[in-house]
Length: 238
Image (cartoon, rainbow, N blue to C red; front, side, top):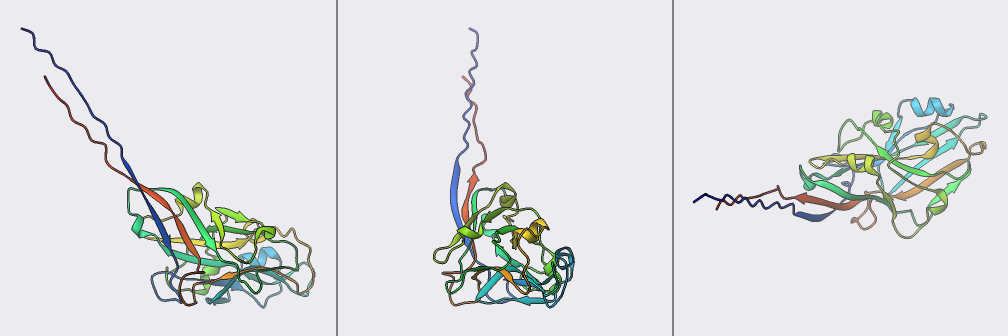
């Protein structure tokens, strides 16, 4: 009698979804941080103020991104950026990001001004020298690739403004460590002033920082991620 061999292979690929919400630590010196690296009290072209050295760092309950004109035609006195780090290590290696949102809460008493024209706010990467403590050199440690943006007209007091991160933004999330982001005006990230210059005028977006009681209004990253079980199988012989 001839033997008959039959093979049966069972393949599984089960995914488990989980959620994540994280905030920067208040102040500096901890695991993470948030604040405003800036260059101020100067009289420079946009190109020069963007490329110059940071001269101030501010963390606090109120955070901003913006550009302020000097009194010299087409030159600027202050450029402010926002930088934040988030502990996303709980995602873990080998998982995948399904969706991610970076959220900022507009400051209720004044959320924006457009003395130089409407300014959009963009999210990008950052590479601070230390994840939990600022140095003035962090002013220059911001990316030039936009991960998400919100138009000036859509920035309003009340609820969080949510920046849904694109694939580049998701790739910027460190699943085993600290994720580092920045917020910049469109004039800053694009290196081109397209507003209407006016002496000593400013265009600024205001939002809440991490240095306040609780986390109800803090900058945050939220999203979902999946952990896939390794494919398994077995072979039966008859």
